[in-house]
Image (spheres, rainbow, N blue to C red):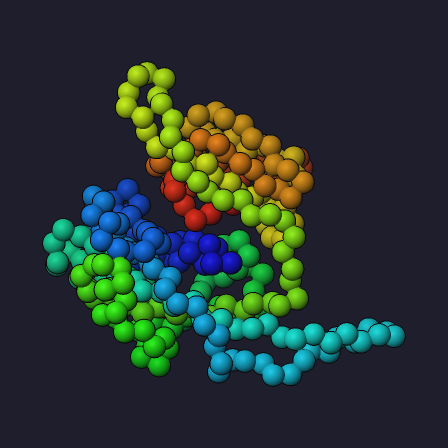
Length: 272
């Protein structure tokens, strides 16, 4: 769920700031000293630093669903606040401040995350997904100075951004997780080793996002590599180079779908 939220925030920033990913990066890594030392171009950092239950929205009762002869009782979803610290990074302070202001404006214009931008499992949320921006009453009890000290970096202007998710306690995960991990590979032309990533994604039904599409063909347009999804609609690419990558999906009885992602990304899922 958090990975899908990251990707939703990425899409919101790209579409509504707007941001050109060829010029500005969007990162969800911890903005510690090591991370900031690697920056080579302007970056918006969205650091998920706190998760806590929203007590104002807690439901104490039970939902009763009645059939013709039976009735079942279940708890309502737990409402959880995911708190981000949003910062801008550039060589010149004036560039940082202009970028941060435009990000603030884009986030503030959307107190409810747009339905058309929701990614993955966020499309299954039982209620609209609210977000709060720069509100003191929504801020977890974390001292900004202590946070930056823990990150071993200089304190800087930050936007507090909190998104409220519904956690269904009745949902049980049965499939194992697929992790993205970095590997090293040598180029065949004798150049220096370059970093590649093992990535995984899922092809799913646009009308029913929980339903994966098995035996779909996933083609990496830049290299021609072809993958086939498993019974849950999942695929794994062992070696993906950093940078833009276009995934072309062909599934029986469905129109061809294309998605361009930036490697690394929080999600490589494709809907068809």
